[in-house]
Length: 557
Image (tube, rainbow, N blue to C red; front, side, top):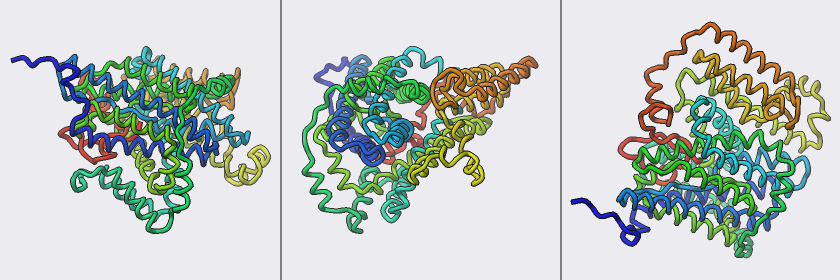
């Protein structure tokens, strides 16, 4: 007997498994929003009224709209395919992007001008550009992903994770190691092994509660701070901040060097996530997903949020936990209510920072590890090549911040004095300009040379020459002849590769395990891929394996 197609009334909005998925996914998004709140307040020094009255409510609008939309997509798919086991895609603020917009875009402007609002304007413009690029990616993304080596894409992301995502949280952890290290240990046990807590208690929530208990019992927290934060609770609804956005867009050229590659990363990651969901049995339309992600970033920036949202990896994990169409919508609504009510000031006073940041270190570790796990062993050098510009950018930023704290600058100290102290400042600064795009180009060149695909290497090297010449990479600003000597260097590389291409050397023969890597991580292999390791999966909350197999650890989008 053929089952009848479920109607809207017969398809429940909530099942028992949604409860477990909601607590897991909800805690993960909660930690991310707490983190970006702290970044706004204590790194860029934005006023509390702007953070709690504008930025968080704007983010809340994007999150609730996005999660309701993905619930709608899930229910539409369930009705179309006559199934009741469809799981909605998870959606939240992108973790790599929130660190990049703070430390790469907003912080340098704040340090140079002393004006956090100017930094905020630049962040809004950057998020808007990201959204536009993702919208374009709905049409061109598959082609970019097809022709760029995975080692280059993941390597430059690993560079971000090792520096901007991992190092600052690690420093914060070791300032209060007696709180943070037990939290990290619990996370590692729950997320990197198949060990489960009694009654399947969410591991992310357990770790947060453990660190909070240690912090309060040890006297690291303050009751008056909680009382003061509770008095700040007030309902706020965002309004359009088009004046701030337009002022930021008036000087958008310097933002393109990071916005372009991160926009490319956004839609390539979204493609992987859709493929991951398809492997678990839920075939979503890629263009619908990309258009929603891009629209979320554009609308959020217009309302005042510089933090682009994105679909997270982890759909198969939430599906395995029993989540269906309700958990995502509930997460979006609850987090949005907390944003509208200004509750994150109170939550920040209740939960010690040292109990929160270990999850960020874990995320950084996993993103960095993924670059090597999801690429051929032969491309390991290409991954390292893609890391290097990002490490240079982070190191240069640390030097600039230290010099600024001392009341001086690198220009005032002088290159000779810095070089005499063993600091190659000028070279690191040039290498780190436009680091994300530079890492992508450099990693691709190395990967194609390793594969003896010299024509493709020459194309990427020539592209690097053009990008350096106009200042999108290795230049302080976007302009004509921004760095001619670097452009000439890339051009010479293109010529050398073109000469070797004339030799018609046979390409490197792939190792046997490379086809399996393509299958597992969404490559060009016709075999269906399984989840890539780039988004928050169920282990962030439950430690459960994906499906019937022990999964690779997953991290935030």
